[in-house]
Length: 199
Image (tube, rainbow, N blue to C red; front, side, top):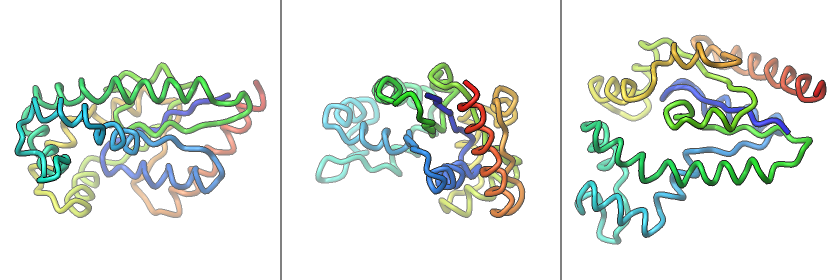
C-alpha cells in the first residue's frame, strides 16, 4: 500500500493534477469533498454558527460558504476556531481510509492543508504542486472574482508554497502549459508504480 499526499496552494493547479491521477486509474480521496461533507452535518453547522454568528446561515439553516469564508479570512482567530471544529473530523476519515486500503493499492490523499493540518505523517510520499506567487494571485482573482487584497489574504493564510516544496518528496511545477503539467503527472505516476513494485 502506498499513500501519496498531494498538496499545493490555492489556484496552484492541484485539482487538475488530481484529475490527471484519476484518469490514470488511481483512487483519490479529496479533502475538500470530505470537508464539505463534514461541514453539512447538523452538529458541525451548529458549532460553526456559535462561533461565527447566525448571519452565516441561510433561511434553511445551511452555511453560506462565501460569508463564512470572508469572515474566516478576515480574522485569524476565527479561522483557527473553524479549523479546530472541522480538521479533527476530516483527519478521522483519512485515518480510516488508510486503514481500509488494500496492500497493492496506491491512493492519493488530495489535501490542500496537508502541512497546516499536520497530516503529512499519514503519507508515504508527498507531492507539492508549485506555482509562482504572482501567477497564483492572478489565478485566484480570475477564478473566484476576488479582489487582489482578498486573494493575497487567502494565499497568506496558507503556508508559503516555497516552504511546502522544500518539504516535499516530489515537486510538480505548474508555471507552464497544461500539456507540460500532464507530462509531469505521467512521469510521477510511472515512478510511483516503480517504487511500489520495488517494495
